[in-house]
Image 1 (tube, rainbow, N blue to C red):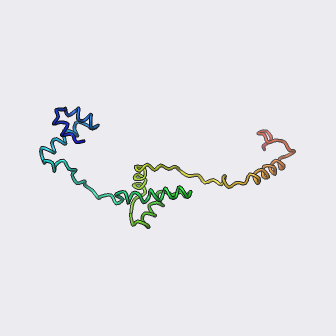
Image 2 (image 1 turned 60 degrees about the horizontal axis):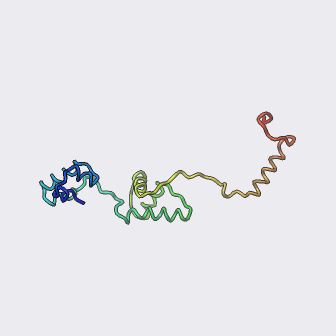
Image 3 (image 1 turned 60 degrees about the vertical axis):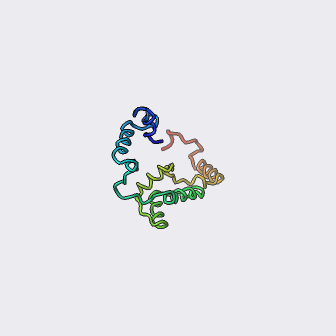
Length: 149
């Protein structure tokens, strides 16, 4: 909803700002832009700087689809590896920090992975190794801090 129809209905700038959940200065700036430039003055002005290279749903969807597909397969990715994939597959040159920020904005979260072979361990072999270690203890005594040396 635009602030001007609300102001025309007799509401104050502070009331309109509360309704639109913005600052009263923002409402006053819209009024001044209308007075100065008419309806065309309310349009967003062009932004300075280079436009982002990874724009739109199609550009942002590619890394997201890759991550969803990889998660289903159990594959993990690093941010630099995803940058390399974007460069090779899509021809998009993007820094790892900026890609991480874009993924964070899209709701992706990650954590550091741990290298572990615990899930591949055979319980039978583990039990045999424990039994062998017990046989190697001197006189079959349990290991305590006193006789550990």
